[in-house]
Amino acid sequence: MTQGDHRRGLIFGNHRASSPMKLAMPTKKEKRRRKGLQREIAKRQMAQAEADRPISRSHLRDLFNYLDEELSAEGCDRSLRFTSRFIAKNGLPEEEIIHWLDEYGGNCDCEVLANVEEEWGESFQLRL
Image (cartoon, rainbow, N blue to C red; front, side, top):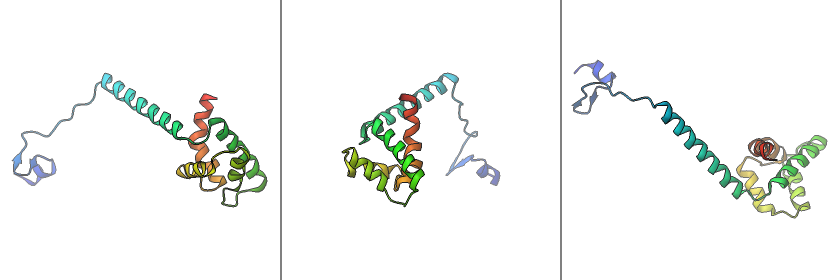
């Protein structure tokens, strides 16, 4: 037993491995299967996220457009005043939506645009 054996991982506790462990590389078929599983998981996660969203797709898109206009004119004061105004105008459940926006990093009007639109806006482009 030499120092080199320890460095090469050939000594496991009091047991000596006969050769270094070899890991088999996945086949192309296995790689395709894994990618398919990853896509399916992502698809399910997105479907669940959409089901949990407390604001409709069209209202969320309209919120992004409204915030873009208001923030261009007045800037962000680090509050959700424009978001709250939009929610009230549209009779939407404010507490649920504000909590949901916060989960995606929308802690003020400009962060709703920067963070929430980044996460959700792209999915709308594909489906609208």
